[in-house]
Image (cartoon, rainbow, N blue to C red; front, side, top):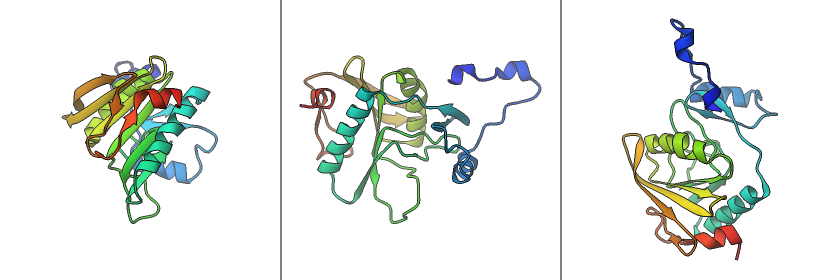
Length: 192
């Protein structure tokens, strides 16, 4: 992934020129990536891993729970672009934002962003958390399929989250900006 980027020191005095989000969106509209699953992170095109069955199941459970719990003033999106920063347009597994009047848009503000991690935990924790905090997203969750735990990030400050907690089986998740929501951790992993 990003570890395999060119080392800028080797290129000096030339520099790498990152792709801007607007340029990326234009390329997407032209169909440049129709046969690829990519997202823009820090100006770089990053391929996304195929989803395994556990990943798809947990993501669907989370999205369905949120859709049932929220009214029509919210958008719950799955695997959809999020216009996070000028150089990043990740595709969170689930996002919740206030519904906009515009029909064709990628939200740039979210109340809750969620990633489901099987093989992507390091990317989700180290890269996406910083991007989401820089955007000011008030809450970010990572559902770790391997450990069946949830990492909860809140209070974005200066490009990082000031608070990080781990939730385990038996805990209930309650988003800070959506107090009417409660999600049992064990229910998302077991389906019961």
